[in-house]
Length: 605
Image (tube, rainbow, N blue to C red; front, side):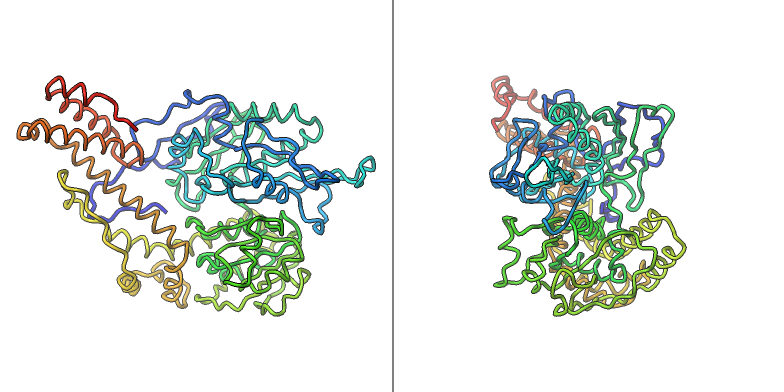
């Protein structure tokens, strides 16, 4: 959530215009609209400078085909582009995670996703460019640092010509981007073509993707792929939470085949339907980073439910590990199933019945059945005791001894029940539930935002000739005192032990991740204000009182400031960096020629 600085800060960084004013309907195919960039440097890197396969790499790491070999089991048959690098450990993870467990009985076509640890710390040549595009992304849509996502299209059909009697193969997209809806839509186009025409069509698809514009937040893109054109908008952190900047279809879009209203949101109502009497308790468990396991009949239901859980605290980023589909072959299996220590802060999605026994010591277990939209309402379910969970065939429900901090909100349950009875469209039910979670999270986070904003020093304390002032420390007791008059009761009708919920949250990985991010943003804001104050100074007049040594020292310090501003993408006003460069140049020119030559040399990295 973007922090609106405290009133005392005075001048704020200009935010982009409201995107609602953008006329999305005027976009034609194969065109790219750049909306106003967010705060940052004066220039955006030129996409024209990108090398072959750079555009592909901005979207995907690689495409894999995983097949079943009678002697080897699952095996990676093909990797595109051929130069893509995967470690043996990463290939093994992809192999096991790309096929459903044998007990899932997935005949026909199945789509799901998984997430696995990156095996080696390989750096992309696009690193700096991708950081720039990532800067304006919402927290939940930033690139993964130490993990990859795998988006799977698995086909299993009877084939008597094969020894096993079945054709089994998966087409898998490996990416750092959490664009689950987009990549599943992409696979719906690519996979059937691939299963029919084999490798040449994969090569064609890779070449198509390498011609796409990069996924820069705030842009509306038209993306041609295998004769089909997809139109999407990449969200930004400046979008109003809870609103979707819908991409309109227009007459000029005659070539556009698919318009995606969202690139990442799953259907919350469908995912939570089997346990929706407990949605508020599940929200608390996710918020607090509790160890959760989802036991489901198939990888599709497992992965959708885990992704729904992670997104229910949006716009807060879920900062712990989560695995939409987890198997006994996973490299973290022993680490996550050991009984010698408490379960880690992680959400696992599993389908293998073996987990019912292996994970029965976990504190919170969600068991879901088939997610077919039921005509009848699910029966009111009580939270079940963990000892009642014997097998994966146990009845659907939530198995936990957890006692929620907040009183149950009966209103949302009645509203959703009424929707089922009146056959309200699933999209409308989903919108109601998403809005409910958003308002609940915002009510919880606003007091924290307000308190953290008060830790910002006053703007008048910023002097160009002193180091930027430090943020005041976060003191839990001081924050708790603010809740009496400015707590969640101002925006939420819910009663309960809000204080207890905050105390628990302040010890969680989600608070740690959120506060680190806020502190970094606020420190950068102070650095930016300090830089702007420097640029307003009359440096020529100041250096007249300096010795040559002091002037050279000033130039070096200003150059360091400039480098830092560019490296960290400091949120300075437009034109600030150009002004600073001009100041540096003017100061250098006031020095003797021999020093000018030295100072004009680029500094070594």
